[in-house]
Each structure stands twice: as C-alpha cells, then as structure tokens.
Image 1 (tube, rainbow, N blue to C red):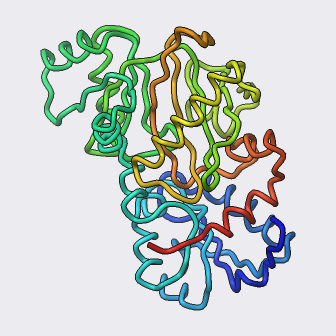
Image 2 (spheres, rainbow, N blue to C red):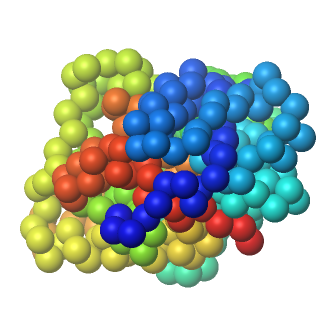
Length: 314
C-alpha cells in the first residue's frame, strides 16, 4: 500500500486466544498475524482476552481481531472496543452478531433474495414424527449444525433415515439453536472479501466425507483449487454476489463468504447457494483468505497490514 506509514497505526493489540471452542485455531491465527505485523515494523502486541483484563486495552490505539467464535466474532469484543473508542478490524457489532448466527443470517438473506439451501430450525423436544417430517421435507443427505458455532464444530452429516435424532443431540451440546440443512453436493467454494474487493474464488475438496474441523486444520489431504475451475464470467458474477451478500449482513473491512454449487462446474446450469459469512476468518497456514490473497498477488504480510489499515469504529 503506497504511502502507508505503519507508525500511524500506533500501539496495536492483536487479540487472539479467547474462551470459545475455537481457541486453538485462534491461537494459531493470531500468532501468525502478530509475527507478520512485527515483520512489517508495526508496534504490535499479543493480547489474550482469556488471560488479561479488558480494561488493559485502553493502552492501545488499534486492535486486530484474530479471535474466532463466541466472545470474539459475535459482536461482544466489538462492543467493548466501541465503548473504549479503539478502532478494530472486521465488521461492527451488529454484522458480527448476525454473521455468527447462521439462522438469522439465513432469514436476512432470504428477505434480500440471496439463494440459500432449504433448511429447518430444530426445536427442543422434537418427537420422532417431527424428525421424520424434516427428513422428508429436506431430503437426505442433510447437514445438522449449531447455529452459532464455527469451524464445523458440532456438525454432522445425516445420510440415513432416523439419523437426525443423534445429529440434533450432538449439535445441541454446543448451542440451543440447531439447524438442519439440505446437502448441496456440487462443490464447496469460498470468496474472501478485502475492503470493497472480492478475491479469487477458492474451491475446497476435502479428503473426507465433508469439510469438517480436521479437514480444515489438521489433515493434509484437503485440496484447494485457485483458480477454482469456474469460467471467468461465472466466477466474476459469483464474486459480485458474494460481496453483495456480505453487505446485506452489514459486513465491512474483511471477511469470507462460503457457498455451495448444486451441479458441479457448469457455468450455464449450476445454482449457487450461499451458506454463511465469516467476519473474523482464520489466518492459519490452512486458511482460505491468505490463499485467495496470494492468488491475487497479495503476500500474507501485506494482507495483514491492509486488514489493519481498514480498522474502524461504528
């Protein structure tokens, strides 16, 4: 970024770790972000909200949020920083809270005409008849997931009739709100957002049945394709749709929008279904935003500095 003087950032807190189920991933992301900022000469310091008092943030001029999941990606830490008047990376309070909540994100997208997979909200105390109705209406296979978790925590794939009961119980251990969603099996893709720009699409091909926690962070057999295999016109169209979907939820700064295709790579006939928004995406060595940035000619260190430059209030 021409003309950018990193001294203008002042003293920067890199927030990572935290208390969510994604703590280990956040520690990985944050340590890499911190190292990149230090390499660029930024006065950056580690700050783990699980181990320090939040009032200590008053000593900082700006915050890079590398927290994932609850208390870091859901609007709570954003609210603290708003009250303290400290500019921070990523989306604001409202967009962060909505983006973390898959159910409410879906409702807003539906209202705005953004295509999403058919889904049902699973209530507490469902009986066998209710589960059977959901399986019949959505069809099999389907996915069951906690509404307010990330990193595929608590997600199950249901392929056989009657399997919804156990999948609901597994997801409910992480969240009272649980969603059942029709499986869209033509391919999984993601679009990274950086400011007003969408980056090249990445196609994800896990080596296991679906893109679960291990496939995201631990396994080495997940294949990431960038270029993604879509034609240029179709890719540009989908990148535009992803940016618009991000804006519908109030997203700003940077993030990631995931979508599924129902018919493989067919520019003419395949339908895209938008899945979810990540307002504080991973920044690990397996993460998708750095991968897309690299395809756009943006190094990891430059990406981190550009994200920090977009820090804002309000």
